[in-house]
Image (cartoon, rainbow, N blue to C red; front, side):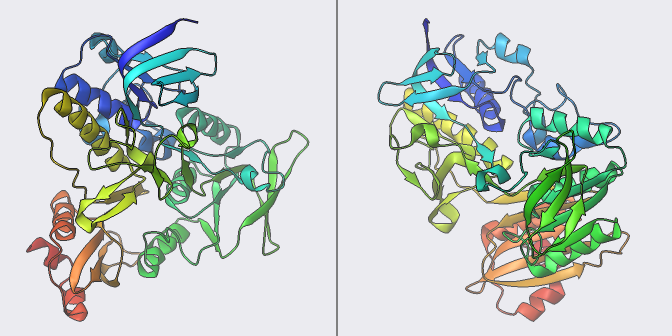
Length: 434
């Protein structure tokens, strides 16, 4: 097969790839210089939609509605946009070998792609229960959500199992968002997770108590402190029951598993420096191989604000790291300096009528303020994290755009807060006066 040769190749077709392509176009890229190679069959899209509006029973989001870069209020890049810019979209193409010293990628069908500069934007893959040998975990109607194909299969199952029983395995991001989405679709929903409360990597017990109470009021059953250890199927091979470690058995027509992800770095093992589970980069997302950059979920980068190396799995960082890498690549070419990446960690979620945002670092002591009664018609509450007498992190549920900006500012500036009782009493007002 003939080789295809490009100046720049972005490997991966998710959020980071789309934002990198937009930045290349902005910085100036010649037709035929840039290619995006993706194993998905569609142009880059805003992945968060899959666990939210894509699953709505009415007015659901569908492509081309949520191609990048609409998620951050930008222009929607349809497949035609890439054509106009002379950017080659190489879709439905899985790369099975990367030879970084030879600047070469090889696809599953034996195609060879050569590049001068590679941007690794492969993202994460979901952790599957079959990886741990969980009995019956290969039954039909056990779903994972990462790509649009996964979401399409889940939508079909929701239609086929109308008013049926759904079990969500996992109490993190995906678990909470899909628990809400399936309940909105009128399914009988149970959530199962081993931790003492939901979203334990971010939420305190106080924050989690609100969401667990809110979900319970919506009729979602929450089962904590146990895990799924097996599944039984009917004669069609469709999942029928979920067996829990504590001996309980749950009926299920649909199971959705959200137990975390792994960065897709296997292609590059032994060819680039790795750290903290990702590919180690500098503040411009350049790896230990000068012609190779890594962005998004796969990159372990210097988080300037905290003076440490971190890996961040979130759409906001995927967008911003992609733009930073392209600025750095083009800056080098033009002999222009680029500022180091100075990222403020940011996470958010929406489910039912709820919407929260978090900025900064969730370390140290915490205070909880505001109205966190799950029965409230319009709950609004938050938390601050305080370390060494400074506020280093802030969380807010039900905030306005201005209030969310205020908590972001607090996390960035890290103002002093010696008295935790006073901070609790002041609550949101503390952020709004900074």
